[in-house]
Image (cartoon, rainbow over all chains, first blue to last red; front, side, top):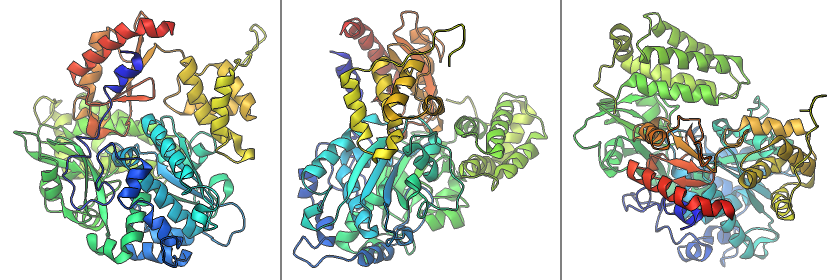
Length: 451
Length: 178
C-alpha cells in the first residue's frame, strides 16, 4: 500500500456517527448512507426542488424574496452555530436595495469542542448546504457566496469543492440559474487551525486573507461585512435546514419542535456515552431520550455532568439535566446554560471537574487571539490558577481569584471568546465548588484515578 | 528578514503546477482581493514543501501582490502552518476535553512511547513529528488525529495507532523517492 492508501484506511465512514438509524424524524440527515452524496442522489430524494420552487421552475409561479424570508421567519429557524439568532430576522437585515456587491458566507469553521455535526452534513449531504445558500442568496439579492470550512477537515473541503462543480455543471450555481435570471456563484475556502475564526467577524478577516482577529461591532456584517460590503453569515446547519422549510412550509417546520424553537437539531454527543455520534432529533426532545439514543452512559457508570452546548456553555449537573429538554429555552431558562452549537459533552462519575476545567481553560488561553487585554491576560490567569489547583498547589484564595478574573473578562472584550472562557469557570464553581475546595485542601481529587 | 551579515532571502521558485494551483484559489475572489487566497496558497506550499519557509512566504507575497509581512502574519497566526521543517509525517493528536474523555491524551502518550519522542519532537530518522492539537471538529470519532494536515484518522485505539505507524514506516522509504 502507498501512503495515500494507508491513510485512507483510517478515515471515518460515518457509520458510527451518522448512519446508525438512531435519529428521530431527521430532515438534514434523512436517507443518507455515505455513498449517496452526489447531485443525482440528492435530486432523487427531492433535492433542489426547493430552489426550483422559489424560482418558479417547478410549474408554480415562484416565491418573491419577501415570501422566502417570511417563510423562514414563520419556521422559527434559529441560528445553529451557537447564538440561536432568528434566521429570518437576520435575513431581513440585509439591505437588499444596496446597489453594490453583497456577500453570503457560510460558517463551517466547526471548532467548538464537542461539535462535529457540520462535518457530517458537508461530507454526506453537501448539496443541501449549497441549495440552502442559493435560496438565501435569492432571498437577499446576493450574487456571490463563500463557504469557510474548518482547516482540520480537509477531506470535507475537497468533497464540498466537488459538489460545487456538480452544482455548477447542472446549472444550480452560476449565471442565470435554471433560466430564471438569478445569478449566484459559490466558492469554498478554508481555515488552517484557529478556533477564533468561528467568530463571524474573525472569519471575515480570515476570508480577506488576514489573521483572524474579530472586529468591533457595530457595524455589523449586514452593513459592513466581507470587503466592507453587506454580508450575511449563517452556520452550515442553518443553511442545510432551509430547503426542507421551503419544500414543506414554515409552519410544518415549526411544528417539528416547540414554540420559539422550531425544527430538528443535530446534537453531537461526545464523551462518556456508549455510542458517541450525531443525532438529529426534533427541538425539545428530552435530554434523557437523547442520552438513550447515544446508548446511555458508559457501562457501569453513572451520569455526573453534561456540558450541553459546546465547551463554552456552563456545565449542568446530570440529575438536573435529566429533567431538561433539548431546546434553546429549556437549557437557558431552566438549566442556566446554553444550547450553543448542540454539542453535548457527557461526563460520568469517574470524572474530576477540576481536571476537566483545566483542559478547557488551557484551550481558551491557547486560542485567545490576543487582541483584547482582558482575554489575552485573563485566559492565561484562569488556566494557570486551575493548573495549580489540579496539581495540588492551590490556595484557598484561588476560589475568589478565579471568580474575579472570570468577572473581569466577561463583557470587556470585542468578541465572545472571553465570555466563552469565563462561563465554563463560573459554571464549574457554581455546581462543583466543593471539588475545587477539596483539591485545594487535600491536594487530590474527590473521585478516584482519572481514566 | 535580512541583515547585513546574511544573504537576503530570495523567493522560492514556483513550478507551473504550483502556480496553477494558486491560480485556481485566486480565481475564487474579486480581482482586487487576491490576498484572500493567502490561506490556501500557504497550505498548498506546505503540502508541497513540508513547511512554510521565508522563501515560500516571499513567493506567495509576490503572486498575491501583498507585503511579505502580511503573509508572515498569517503563517504565524494559524496553528497548522509549520514555521519550521517537520518530519515526513506530522501527527497531530487531539487532546481537547471531548477527546480526552475518550483516550485522546492516552493516544498521544502511546505515540510518545512508540516513537520514543516527547510531544513536540521529531524522530531521529526524520519520519515523524508528534504534536498535541486543539479541537479538530470530529469529537464523536475520538481519539482523533491528523496526519500532514489533510488526512484525518478516526477511532485511533492503541492497536490502530500501532498499525498506522508500522504501515507508514514500511511505506515511507518508497514514498520518499517518489
